[in-house]
Length: 227
Image (tube, rainbow, N blue to C red; front, top):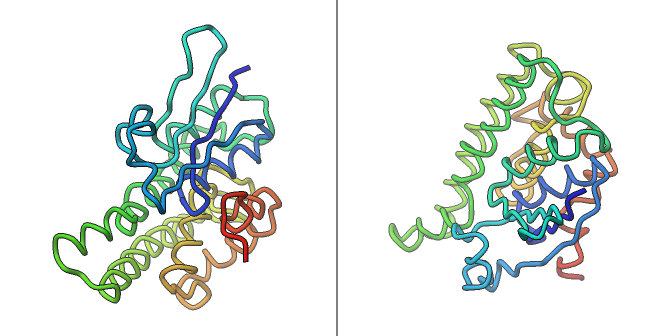
């Protein structure tokens, strides 16, 4: 069985995806904390394993003497967990090909359309290159959250996908990615989920009741600041 190491940061939404999936699939792993705030992810040591200098990285060591495989994108890591640990915990991709495509489409709304547009490096570039102030950065992030969460809401309601979770009553990779996306939208950018997205509000309430989701929240991580 591969030995896993998760390089991450407590506030990283992409890292949160992996924490949720690893917990749901009951996979043991070691954590290496990367201090994003102090730009440790841009140092030579981390760049050597992830040239994109993004978080997280999942290292998988098969014990064959070849050293670990470094999986440097969160969705690739999530798919790896499904393939490498098919009998662990829950299955996060449906058996039906059409439903798998639906799940992957929702995943992409979050990881390709929502998250990059309000990521730290995007907001940093808006400030550095276009002199955006904090209020303008917040408006930028808020507006993109509204647009992409509306797309997600429409997909799960107009097609009748939504049940207890995003695709029926079984938690999938779509939900794993949705949770930190909503946490950012609500906690950082002030989106009113109940007012603007009633279907997502219900789904999120169900997801918040899942112990593995609760334990993956940034405030519960060992590297999170303690009040």
